Image 1 (cartoon, helix red, strand yellow):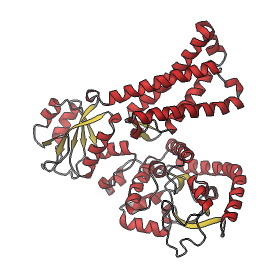
Image 2 (image 1 turned 45 degrees about the vertical axis):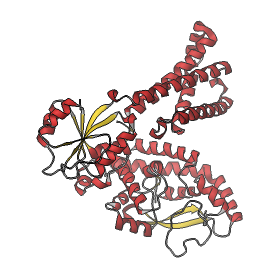
Image 3 (image 1 turned 90 degrees about the horizontal axis):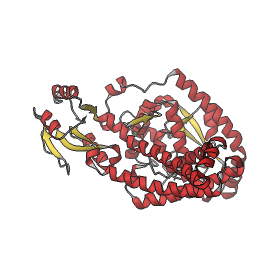
Length: 463
């Protein structure tokens, strides 16, 4: 795993994205050479902004590939889905570039070169994806690992690593800390003994993942230290789980880890940056969005009776209550008893116009006023109503930790998982929120905003 902007990405996936960008660049350079000949192509590329024009195409192409989830592990193994989405990427690329070329004609490549380059890039991408799938299925090019321990964390890691071959980690042995055989299909089970070194040597193990539920008095420290001096990587299972899932393992969370783990403390620079960034960006967005907000307000008034703006109490930093503003998208008087009920799919409380508003998240626009006045940041844990927060505090350990930072209009949990309605779903959301609080940075905020734009454009996650 490689850390970029305080988030973790599989090295193979990053290499795939980089190689496809290079492949697309070569495809368009080759198209210029084929169309104009070697000599004229050199002039066009070096003296007629040829490389700049190609860079624009390739940059737009990579963004489209990401927005169509072509670097998502759920899509890697489906050849038909890959082909369909690559075709969609090329179609979207043409539409975006048509708009750019209309506004900035000097960046335009000739139609012949563009068509040839697109055809070459498409063929190259399909071949590169097939090669990527082939490499992922070869066990010899994967790092051979042992899982040390049992319990929920160990089983989760075994399952996740089996489903995601692009991580390049293959679990070939599972050592049970309680010396009881575990029903792990396809894996060998071993027991703690002096034979650990022989197992590592016999199976060419390069990494041991420690996922023990109880380590005191049970972890073979001396054996692991000896193996580490021989070049074997000893990795904490909690650390690996955080890297591959983008969230904290709540089952393994201990108060001592919260106390001594790096993170969970915003620096003065981060606080100043987040306030200034939120203040300036919210002011700009309010100026741009004000005409649209007036039209939306009129449409809400015409669609159903009741106030245009919906006001609701939410829990902010340190448990402080503030009033959140949204465009009303439900029938007036909903939840009049003061008890908040999460929205459901096809919720009958939602108005006709409100359903459209919620689908593209325009009901959230008035929150710009909350951000401007300092109730919220653009990025942070999503605030909930008091009764829901109290319910979560009672049932979810360490839930109050998400109140240690100011809430946000969008957050790591919102861009990483679907809508939350149950205690179990909110517990999973807390795991993402704790990851954000621990890794909070300028880069991670920008990455979350980038993913938020993707979700808004594709209309995902709303109810």
